[in-house]
Image (tube, rainbow, N blue to C red; front, side, top):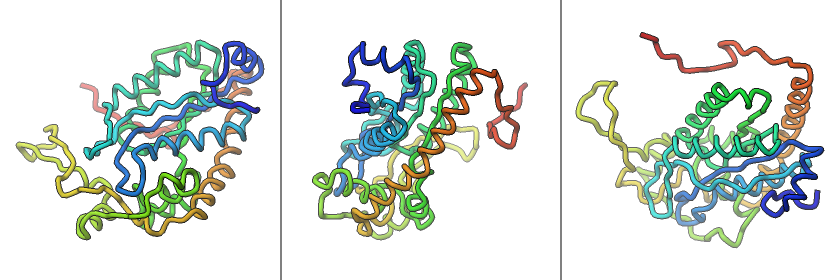
Length: 285
C-alpha cells in the first residue's frame, strides 16, 4: 500500500479498503517529561513511527493517534488525563471503528504507564462484555517493548524511562530532536529511580490502614525524571530494537488475524482458564 495513514484517505478510499481488509492499527501515547535531552512527544513517536512500519508490513492502515493518557509525572510538558477518561475515549473510538466495518483492532501503546494500561485492558474487557456487537471483534494490545529482546534486557539492567532504548530510538527516528546534553537527577535520586521506577511517586495518608486512599504526587526531589542510562544510547541500538519488533511482532499479528478470521467463520473460540486469564477477583458479599 502506498498510503497507510487513515487520516490521509478519502471516504471512497476507505470504502474500497474495507472491501478486502478489516484490520486497523490504533496508536496511543502522551506528552510526558523525558529529561533535558528528549522532547515531550517521545512516546507519541514510539507509537506513530512503529505503527506505520507495522501497518506497511501487514498491508493495513493506521488510525490517527490518541495523544493523551496518564503518566503521573508532574514536570512541565506532561499532560495527564485520568485513566478512566482515557479508557472511555479509546472504547468509543473502537466502537466507531467497528460500526464502519473494522474487525481487527491492534492497539500500539507508545507509553507504558501501568495505570493507563491496566485500566484500559480491564475497561475494554468490560466493554466487550456489555456490548454483544463486539463479540466478533478482535482487540489486541501489543506493547512494543515486549517484542524486542534488546529493549527488555534494558529493563533487566535497570534502564527504563528516557534512557538507552528510548534515546536510541529517537536518535534513529528523529536525531534532529535529540539534545546533546544529558542531565540526570542528583546521584542518590537517579540511583533510586533506576532501582524503582515508581520512586518518583510520593504517597501520604492519615493512617496506616490499607483501606485508605493515599494522596499521591511527584517527589519534589525528582527534577529530571530520567530512569536509566541514556548516555549508553546510539543509532545502532535504535535500529536494532526497531528491527527486532518488526521481526517478532509482525508474524504474531499475521497469525492472530488469520486465526480470528477462521474463528469467525467456524464460530470456534478459545476457552480461557484461570491460568491464562489473570483477573483480580473481589469477594462478593
